[in-house]
Image 1 (cartoon, protein in one colour):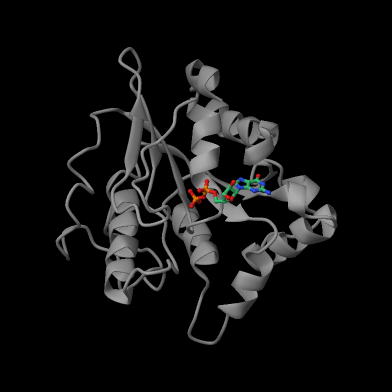
Image 2 (image 1 turned 90 degrees about the horizontal axis):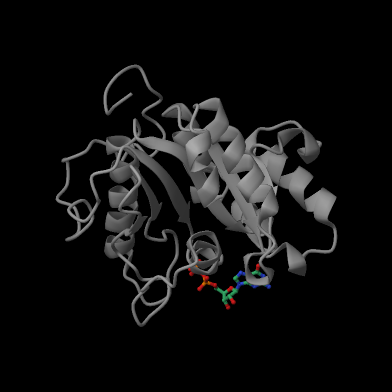
Length: 231
Ligand code: GDP
């Protein structure tokens, strides 16, 4: 794994290649030296901070304005060679100029490239109520929606990927919604056959068991049952 090789460079083509652009301050310096990592990515306002709180039991300092965090939040344990990382949100953010948005996206992409070997699981958090509309609005001949591109990017790097479909408490037609999402991601419905990949949750209500199950599945596959206590 790494930044070179016969990969589909069309994915995030303008963002890849660690060191091609100077990162925003703090993007790479703050990572604790840990071998195992689980990363969370997602657009702003999908409920990622709420989910991080559920997962780690800690309130992350996201700055005064939600959604404009430019640095990763790392959560680690002294006795463990393991870190949970909340990567900056990307995609549209109210009040954030496009060039800053693009730099954040580049940073996130390059962070994942750089630590692909250490990343045991990549979790993409989406808003179950809005995700299909957002994906469809951004799909076109020259455009791949962020969430879909991120999904393919993680998988291409060989990182086991889980899509945490949050805010399911707001969704009535759960099966239909999740099947639609599978189709957009190139997974054959029904969604029930992808429970290691598609995890419907409600972070706000504390219903995150499907995510924990999915993450555990991937940890187990990598012989990291020792990390089950975190999920
Ligand atoms: P972030 O920008 O992705 O970190 O999102 P936040 O965690 O700040 O959440 C954005 C908004 O979504 C807040 O108003 C949360 O209360 C709300 N939210 C988060 N999780 C859920 C959920 O599971 N269900 C519902 N209905 N709202 C949620």
